[in-house]
Length: 142
Image 1 (cartoon, rainbow, N blue to C red):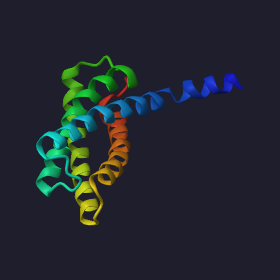
Image 2: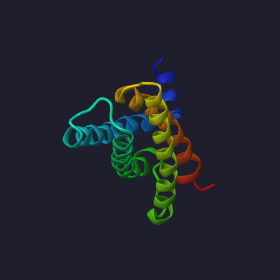
Image 3: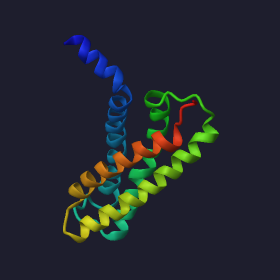
């Protein structure tokens, strides 16, 4: 039984570590988002369209900075030059930033509060970020 678990951990190590790093990235980016909301928007549960866009931008920027370095080191264990990877990473995250913004606005239109908007968007964006990172950014040499 223990050997089976070890084999599964080895087999799925990248995905497991990605999820751990993803949780940490989420904590860092949400902390920045909700701190911004608290400081500048009186901790509103129903931000305006502009406030939502600013909050998404704060969330995204802190998440990208934290995620690039942690994904590079712990998930994909990359040694490629940063000048090659970083632009691809940022570009892939720009695309998921737009996914986040659209998701938040659609959910807002349906009456969802900021908590629901943030949670649903996080699931969609996390899956897309893994796919983009795996296929386009941190490519292993063959």
